[in-house]
Length: 224
Image (cartoon, rainbow, N blue to C red):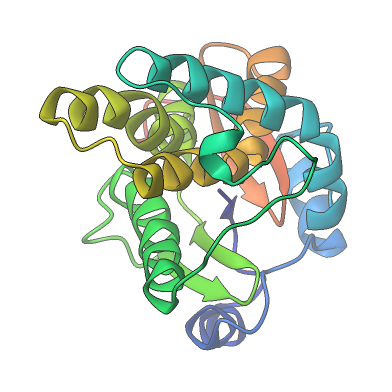
């Protein structure tokens, strides 16, 4: 998940609507935020770097999902097409791609709806690129709410949903795959949570600039 600030009003809005690229870190905005008292949270500035650094969190996410799935249904490499001779055989149907697109959309929608006043906000947008979706907002958000926004898709889809589907007896292979894909896709989210917990104080608000995050002590005007 990206909670990021459009660099300029109309230009950035068009970029989000077109979905051709994600807003990048802006040096001029960085200088302005620092001058206004915002403190930079050290972390990756580029998407590729963030994905690489988040690999350990990807492994942790997948392990958590596997443990949760195993409560209701066994999960093994053989189930995913792995054979004793070391080969892998699986079939991907066109509607499987459709389900992945739905997964990405639902993942980003969960981020979106947890943003304060998301229906009325003129500073919050959701968009998609060839590499996935993202949420963009200029809102200043309290730390606890920011963490909730960031963790929501992983927790709901990859931790809670196995309990729901397992209880209903519909924890099928395709459902398991989608749950695990979401865990993998949530690795940058969990990296973001780690960096925020480590660097931002409890009584702070956060905002972003590209992938980079900033914190500032909360004031009476901050959103709750």
